[in-house]
Length: 120
Image 1 (cartoon, rainbow, N blue to C red):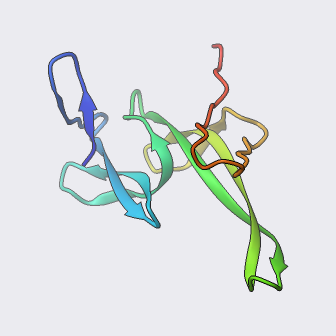
Image 2 (cartoon, rainbow, N blue to C red):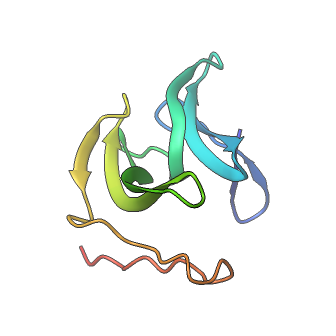
């Protein structure tokens, strides 16, 4: 479970009957949700996620696109697309907050990812 920071402490929070969980894969944390029985109800698949509020959650999803093959290194050439999404309690996409994918250049792995801010 993922601890949520409050003014006085950090602890897992169930919101709308769901709690954030994290699963490490290939050195990255992917976030999903469990219900109050501990059952995984939304598989960890998001690079970032918020607690549910009013039946919705804001998440960052990555999609991998194979765009070619490198014969020298014998590896696929891939492109990653990042999307800010609003999901429902079943993990279905309700809305794309970024209509176009956010692309992150791999030029320096110490670079920070800066996502655009959204005005409501």
